[in-house]
Image (cartoon, rainbow, N blue to C red):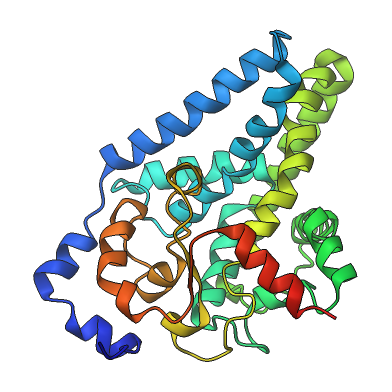
Amino acid sequence: MEKLLDSALVASISGAQKKDLLVRSDLQGLIRLTGHAAVLVSGAGWIWSSAPFWPLVLLPYSLALISLFMPLHETIHSTAFRSAWLNRVVAFVCGLIVVIPPVWFRYFHFEHHRFTHDPVRDPELAYAKSGTMKAYFIYLTGLSIWLSLFRGLLINALGKGTDNFIPAAHGETVRNEARVFCLIYGVLIVLAVMGAGEAFLWLWVLPMIMGQPFLRAYLLAEHMLCPQVPEMLVNSRTVTSNWLVRFFTWNMPYHAEHHLLPGVPFYRLPQLHSLTKPHLRIHDTGYADVHRQIRESLK
């Protein structure tokens, strides 16, 4: 079968199929969110009560917590739920937990979609990722990301943001959002000093630090080593992985599919994958193999 490029493949999908793919559902979104939240609540309870083997629960809990980046991503696309208010509320809560303000992230991420893997205009490529083995491992620690996130939050709160992907008319909205985030974090710091510090440490701060390398590893695989061309079936990688990874990543391993049609909700991406699979240029089955390829490419 001839491999189609983006426009030809999209044109080959019937109107009825596209309509079905683009259906958004509060129920589907709430089912996934409830399942994700249930794992977090169970893990937090296990850790906080010092139940048997609780240290072994800390790592999977950390992975589930940092994976709240995924519903944040889905909600800034307004595809997690049909209801706009649900998308906004979940985006705010998840953004607060992973320290990524959703309004700012929406403009950042949409710029990434507009200029995917463009070496000059894709803002995601502004983060130093690799080139050497040393840079690769430093990136995976997440330290540079944490510094960038907190620095950006403070700069935006002070009204000194210079991100060129933020429309001038929405600069005040981004600034006010950053100020609200800073205010809430300030309150949390006060509560920590007053006695809640241990809970914050074990249930939020430490798990976020532990989980960030795994999130970095996942995100690095989305486009690393893909050709820098304006074709989503070429510049993005789909990693089918396993059901557990797909559950906590809200099906985002179907990444070429997501970039091809960003309006398709996460629960329709497997359906879209069945149409795109024969045309994918970069399709892997696991993240360990992707990172082996990345390491082999490094100096």
